[in-house]
Length: 176
View 1 (tube, helix red, strand yellow):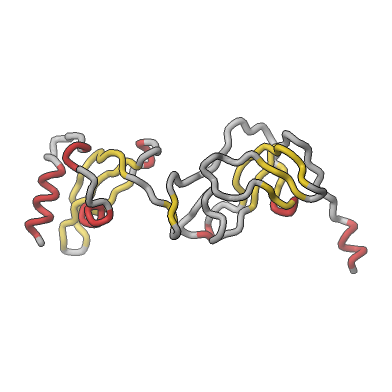
View 2 (tube, one colour):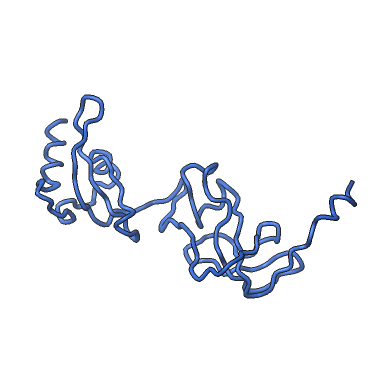
């Protein structure tokens, strides 16, 4: 059986300078990339250049400085990157803690009030630190104030004819 299985297997020989994709262990190695749902997340990350060959089956890669994993990988964890890739695609969180990414708010772009069930809920459009404006997310104002109590909302708001965030905070405090 082993003889027939090995007929179709080819050893992966890589050279220094080749670009490779890395398969990370889900739920373990998440400093390079973390997803809320690991099952739907990416399987391979990179492309990373090979710096040197370590032994006969391991390679040292040039990882981003924000990653907190060891740069030496077994050949079974690597996949040769085909095509012309100038820029690495690595969705990295900027700060991490034990349970996942820790994003810091940078700016409040807009406010809105939505109806959820039979209640009015105030929301803030938050731009996160180190991300583009297109990656801004709508967050509930109450939960945002609980998670980031020292974030000063008055200085960060842009006006769109709807008032300031201080009115949102005062309205939320009056409801309680």
